[in-house]
Image 1 (tube, one colour):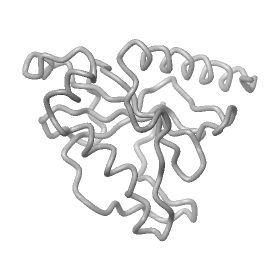
Image 2 (cartoon, rainbow, N blue to C red; image 1 turned 90 degrees about the vertical axis):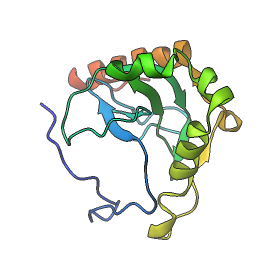
Image 3 (tube, rainbow, N blue to C red; image 1 turned 90 degrees about the horizontal axis):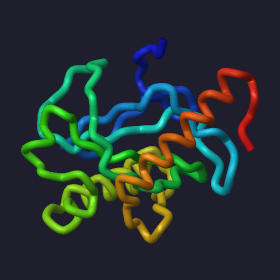
Length: 162
């Protein structure tokens, strides 16, 4: 299985995040961003930002409805940020696609601001978003998940995807 570990810097030190987050952050098992493409993937499972309002416990497994994805380039590597809402909160948000949130809230802007700046405190440059920072919708995000699941399958079979 996947151990629960603290995120570390490239120097192996515990990462301290500057700023406050108002969402839960996790990963999607059985996915892997392979170091292929331009920019290459970050060699991690896909990250998920749960935009719901409930505070979750560390390690809690939460079914999430995917509503979109942000194409983040983090220190030169592709680092997709899936956007979702926990299934037990979906009725509150009446949202099946990120475009509804873009029209009605500033939550996506807050997520983008955080990930654009979160490594600046470590002395690193601001991160950038592809696609002019416009999130991809639900169907495109599900396609990314399928592709990264295939990368994970290839990793497990010791075959690097191309």
